[in-house]
Image (cartoon, rainbow, N blue to C red; front, side, top):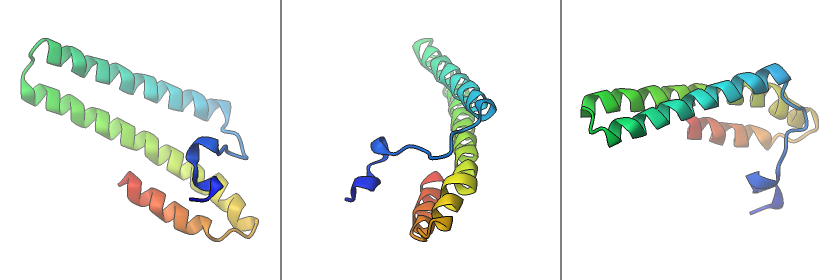
Amino acid sequence: MKENDNCCCRFKKTPRSEETSRQLRNRINRIIGQLNGIQKMLDENRYCGDILTQISAVESALQNVGYIILEEHMQTCVIEEIRNGNNDIVAEAIELIKKLK
């Protein structure tokens, strides 16, 4: 594993806009609220179908956050790396897309 492969040590070169960061935080907070709601439903022994419906909603919301971040990644990080001559970034982007499916 190369040093750059460690995601905990990498940062974006182009910062996210305040608006994008705010929107992502709001979406994540909403997802956290939905997860807390599912936990409460479990504690209350609620109907399985209702819980599964809420799980589906959380999965969809989380996937949408992923799509927003992927789009931003493609428009900033990937383009910057290609301009800097790093064509390997395309393979990384493809792997990220596969993970997000």
